[in-house]
Structures are given as structure tokens and as C-alpha cells.
Image 1 (spheres, rainbow, N blue to C red):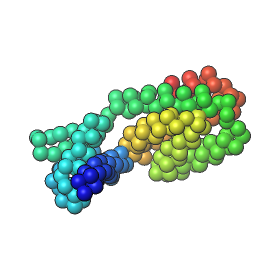
Image 2 (cartoon, rainbow, N blue to C red):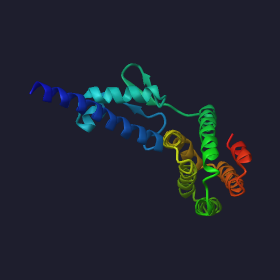
Image 3 (cartoon, rainbow, N blue to C red):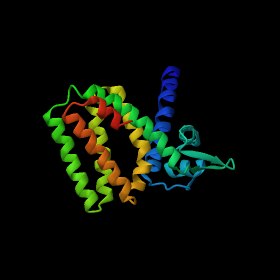
Image 4 (cartoon, one colour):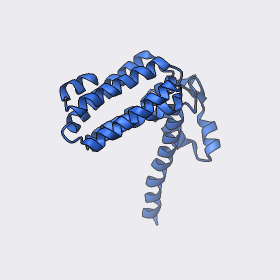
Length: 207
């Protein structure tokens, strides 16, 4: 009986913490919880119907990722993002994608090129028709396709983590037509290099 009880305690707490962590992180990254909003441990525990311990641990994990910051020892505030954050995450993402391209260039075939080109056509139409929500979705899809071509689980996981961090900036892209157009040109150049298997310029494009 003691062994069974001990086993339940070990499994339950991390699971609750992980659930709270993932739900809060997704809400922050997608903008469902806006910048500057405040989070309170007691309120979250009350709304979710769970104890404060897993909530506290989830909040600490988000704080370590610089998504929230403690305020007055009573709560947390959603951290705003600035151009320096965008530059740093973009550089890391480009490095990961450069490695993915190196692995993908010898494997990529006509079907994969067509998939990327179809994405570009839809994205170009979204920019012209000023449909930012559609473009944001296609932008994320392009990067997912690109990294999946590497067939590297580690690179795919890293890229997915960075993609989630970039989500907050992609939300801003909804209001920035110039940034969307620049992203589209970047994607077009990558596809052009992949079509001719120009790995050097393809990697240079991402760095």
C-alpha cells in the first residue's frame, strides 16, 4: 500500500505541473494572455481547481524562460518583447535552420519542392490580399516543412521550441505588412537555392 501511494504521488504532481505550464505557455505565446497582464498563483489554482504547488512550479518554469517576471512577491507579469529579443531568437533559429538545410539539400526531391512552392503561392496571396492571420499560419508551416526535411528529430524539436517563441513576434506581424513581405522574400530565396541544390547560398540566406 505504501509503495502504491508513493508511486501515485510521484506521477501526479509533475503531470499537473506540466499541464499548467503548457497551457499557460501556449496562452502567452499566442497572445491569449496579453503583454503586461498579471498572473496570480492563488487565482490560477482556484480557477483550475488544483493545489497551489503545481501552479507555483509551473510559474517558476515560465519565469526561468523569461516569459514572466515576479512582481512585488505577490504575482507575475507577462514580459514584453522587444527588438533585441526578436534578433536573438531569429539568429538562433537561423542557425538551426542552416543545419537543417545542410541535411536536407541532398534528400529534397520534386515533391518537397512543390510543397514549399505551394506554401509560397498561398503566402504571397495572403500578403497581397492583406490576410495577416493566414500569412502567420503559412509562415510557421514553411519553417516546419523546412526543418522536417532534415529528418533530424533533435533539430525538429529545437526548431519547434523556437517556433513557439517566435509566435509572439508573428502576432505582431499581423500588423506589419513590410515585415511579412520581407519574410516572404526570405522564403523565396531559400526555395530557389534548394531547387538548384545550392547549399552554400541556402545556408547563407538563413544566417
